[in-house]
Length: 210
Image 1 (cartoon, rainbow, N blue to C red):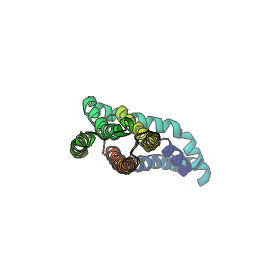
Image 2: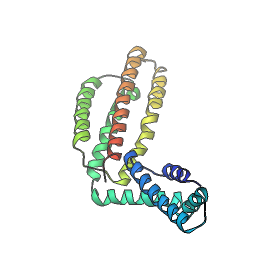
Image 3: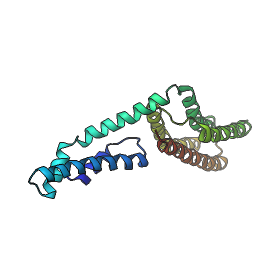
Image 4: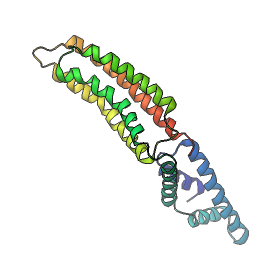
């Protein structure tokens, strides 16, 4: 295994480590293996290729090294930024509450009084999202980061749920297909905003220094 092969396999096993951190870590590992290689060339009768393979073989395996880095990364975050459970509930509410509100007309089959409730709630969630984006604590914990990653499963499946609810409503005797079709389009647009906003927040957390 060459140094490049080692680094490629190592990088594929990293989780939640930002690209900036990955670049720095890979540079440090390459430097250490190169140093081992130089020592082998100096003290052993080996060519470049053999020395490189032996240097890689003598180093910690990619899987073990990745596990060690992942553990250090999460421990560092947890030690510095523990006790954020209430704040993280706020994160989840900003993401999930609008999705729950948007699906109500599909369930009830009626817009009665809904617009009066929807606009104030969405305005509140927009303000909350801006506060969250700019003023949220420096970092969330590793467990919260994993939970946030799992939220993407909900976000990716949400359009399927909306379309399924839309189709079911077409069979109502008092269906409102034209209004519902327009509302479906608006709901999908809001879903896209939430999805992109969540991804931006997630990447922002990843790219913050430890």
